[in-house]
Length: 636
Image (cartoon, rainbow, N blue to C red; front, side, top):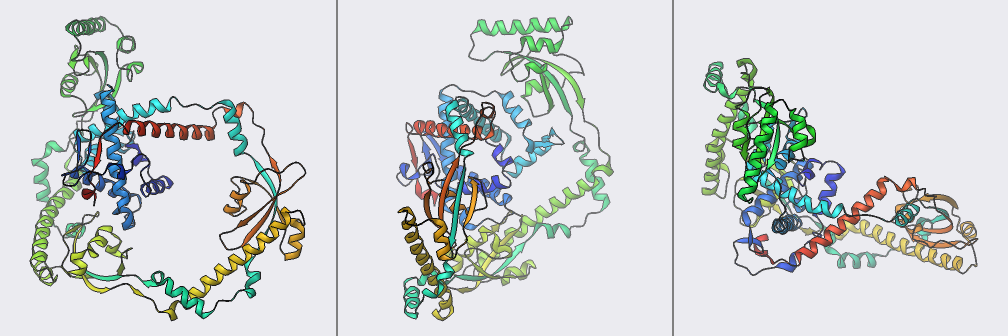
């Protein structure tokens, strides 16, 4: 499911996701679909509109997830730049294209499948079981309603059907598997030496004229960054909460008033037998389904085992083989007609056939859990937190409104707002467009600080809502424009850069001359090592070896295998400015058995990559037949 991406986005997976966001969207080129200006939407896919509000909501959700992954420390150009916007819109267009295609082709996902997907999601589970409270809490955090989220889940499952169809068709011939493992496991025996650039240091000289010329040509590289110092007013929910005093009498009154809220949620474990019947069926089919359900119900009343009946008769493939088991169900999890029947049963009781959107369902109540009243002592701290939260929300909203009004009416100072609201004006250290410390780590603050109104017009900012729940109004106290650093300050830095470049070029020139002699067979690597005073080394390396510099290992595996009794030579410029001369002596191919070709994780990954490319190609073919427009002015 697409939602699982977020669940698994930690560690290296998270960094991979961020990396993908910063490159062009693989399926979709925005330039291909630029539309005429003036639209209130951000894009259209055939006759379906993607609104600016939908885009902004999804963009904000993506930005929140990035900040959660990296503890709020996401570079502003990544969280706010054009790459993430194009990626989000590209994903929305892709989803809409595939939604239309799968819907037109008649692919459907049942309510039961949606429910099972949600209940099996680890993010909604507590102690291994689905928690309705956690489900509702997380949806509220993401600003999603239940119907909206369930629609996303349904669409995700629908798209998974298409991807699954492509992935299930992937294969790799035995000969190709064998060749792949042979290449992957190949080892190469080499001799090599490193020409150290420093041994030619005396031959390199950098003049003042060269330094001056480089400085004048590359002055933009030696600028001090534009900087600002900010002053700001902050409203912090957590600090407000510390000042809220609540007495025991108020807590007890709240408990008595809302006692019904402090019951453990009642859940019911149920099983069912489904006889499918859809509104599209004709009357004969509908009557046949109703009669079949009634007949099964009579058999159950006569003593037929429920699990055996489910396995024999049920049209629900997900629960059929497990005796019809649906797991734990709370109010709101299933359609109302189903829940009304389930919650009217006693433990072990079986309902008469119930007509639902899926057809006719015979329901058995297996277990009842929860529903007990919690004592005052058990919920006292929870009630105290709720009262404090309510009080803080009220104060926070009121003070936020006042802060907005006062800083707007007095746009050139924070003094009046600070005095009227009893707030302290705080200051930051110097901040660049790349960030700073404290509030300057927040991309929203940086965006506001360097906006035209705040930076150029010296106005107070609009209210900035931070992810930690606080709000800010900032203004620029001091501004230092970008300026060139004097040549005297950067002279040594430039001299070292030019010296490094000259040394790298010189050692490469020396290395290439020696390489030419070896290729002409007028000398060999051992003789060269003795002539230049370098150590001759040997190595037997694989593609994954770490004993050599990565660029050297990569070069070794691009060399053609030498003929028997011969040696192949290669020169490799290294990133540290040195130069390697390599003699490839032998190539060893591993023996690959038939057993190694089966259930091999490396081959599985390769097939998965082939399948993904097939899916991309399929999408591009589908996309080419759609009418897509993007209104670029709305993307700014």
